[in-house]
Each structure stands twice: as structure tokens, then as C-alpha cells.
Amino acid sequence: MQLTSTLAWLVDAAGTSAGADRLLAELGTHLIEDGVPLAGGALTLAVPDPIIAHRTWLWRAETGAVIEALGFAAAGLAAPAPAGPPGAAGRSWLAGLAAGKVHEDTAGPGLGGPGLDGPALGWIGPRPFTQDEIGLLRQAARFAAAPLAALAARITLSAVLEAYLGRRSAARVLAGPLRRDVGETIRAALLYADLRGFTALSEAAPPAAVIAALDAWFDRIAGAVHAFGGEVLKFIGDGVLAIFPVVDEPPGSACDAALRAVAAARAGMAHLDAARRGQGLPPLPFGAALHLGEILWGNIGAADRLDFTAIGPAVNLVSRLEGLCRPLDQAVLVSGALAAETATPLIPLGTHVLRGIASPCAVFTVPES
Image (cartoon, rainbow, N blue to C red):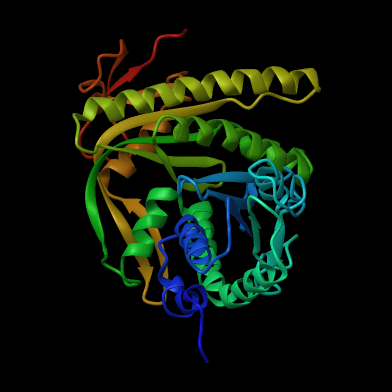
């Protein structure tokens, strides 16, 4: 069987494409080489993401550039519904690119995820496509089903790991072997925070209200962590453990980022508490502790059940330090190790013994804004 350049590439090489953007651009280039006049193309895939319902890559033939458009999911406890029809962004963009008519095919039934029968491939040219050209585009969509299925599987795996582990940890898991004792020691600013009085709230409020309160709290604290370059490692009940790795720069940068994240989280929680009071709901006070130290970041667990997390004396210290927030009547506590690396003005609170920690810890807090 004599295959065109496009179909031969789809069979032999497309499955190794680095990503959806490269696959779309290379597929478009091969189609042009086979005589199909293209001005641009679009590829839409559904993804299992807490926020994003589908992703669309848009390729411009004239420049070879590929950009990405995101379709966001509706928020809520139920399964997310796509905001707008999948593929609509691609069709709209293509229609404004050239004078031809948009041609769209589904590349393999059932591969696109919820809301899509399969990955959607769309094309447009400077004029309407002939029947022969449409036939080649349809053949290309059929042959693209297998490499797109492999690509969708990789994107799905990466999206699921990022949702549950965080971006940096997910990348480490994907790059390393699945066995214990695989990890590295890194230096990082650590943040540990949890809600005060959450046990009483969980016993007094219905489960849906408790989950809503937790989600609102996690949105504020995790959003602030991510905004300043940190990563949430764990949600532990109503608590959060996050890190700001020290990478190729003085540790003060990571420490300052952690302090800014806590300040942003406090501002966000102040707005949330005001809204809750307006609804007749109690506020959600919290305590947070910051520390700088070394952690072991990697695989830990049983032989056949692993967790990717951080352990070490620094993790123990920041957890114990947060436990002093209530006795010292402070919302934020900072260890001496982190205080020594930042120029941010801090208020000394003396040296305190932390449960289970051999050496007393110098403790600071932040000025009230």
C-alpha cells in the first residue's frame, strides 16, 4: 500500500511527538507537502483537570506558530461541565484566519474525553477544499487516531499527577522509577498552616457546608502559595504543607516568597470571613508557620504503595511551630532560621521549646498590616 507523506508520518513517527502543539504543526506541514492548501489548523482534546475542561491548540501555517486556548470547567461539587462547546474556540479562530470553509473531523471515537466523541481536528485553507483534499484530511484524521490516543494518555497521566501531587512533584514522579528510596535532599522554605476550631465546625455543620468551607480555605492558601512560586505538597485534614524550593539563588528569595504568600492568604481569608459573616456563618481563623531547612523529597511508603512527599526534621519543626500559634495568640510564626535570611521586618517573640524538637527555636511574628 502506497502511503502519502502525511499518512506515512502518522504511522511511523507521530506517536513520538513531544506534545500536541508539535503534532499539530508537523501534521499541518506534511499535509501542505502533500498538496493540501492550509492556512491553519486546530486540535482539541478533553483533559481530566479540576479547572480545565478541554485544551485547543491553534496552528498558523504562515508562521508555524502554535498557541493554546483553554476551555474552563464549571466549579462545584458535581462533575464539571465544559464552559462552551468543545472545539468552538478552534472553529471560531480558524474561521477568522482565511477565506475557506472550516473542515473538521473526529480522530477516533471515544478518545476525546467527556463532551467529545474524540480529538477534534480542524483545518482551513485560503479557498474551499476540493473533494480530493477533503478525502486526504479525513484519511489523516483516521490515521491520527492512534498517535492522538497515545498523546491523550500522556496528557491525562500528567494532568492527574499534577492535580494530586503538584506540578514539580508530578514531574519528579514521571521522570523517576517507581520504587522506594528514590528522592533527593533539597533546601526549601516550608509553610505549614491549618484552621483553628475545625473539629468543632465539622461536628456542628452539615458535610456539604464543611466541604465548602475547606474548599474556600484551600483556594486562598494554595492560590497564594502557587502565586508566589511555591508548591502545595499535602492537604492534611484542614492543614496544608507547602514548600518554596531554594533554586540557583540565595535562600532569601524563597523565604520572601513564603512570607508574601502568607500575607496574600491572610488578605484572602479576611475577605472570605467578611463574606461568611454576611451569610451568618462563623469566620475561619487559621495559624501558619514558616521555616527554612532541608527536606528529603521523594518516594516513601510500602513496597507496593508509595507516596511522594517531604520528610525530615524541618518538616517536624514547622509543624510543631504552627502549634504555638494559639498559645502565643499569633496568626503567623516564623522560625529563626527563616528570619535570618529575610530583610522583611519581623517581631521577635523569644526562644521557645517545641515538642519533640531537641533545640529551642527562636520565634518571630510578622507586624500587623
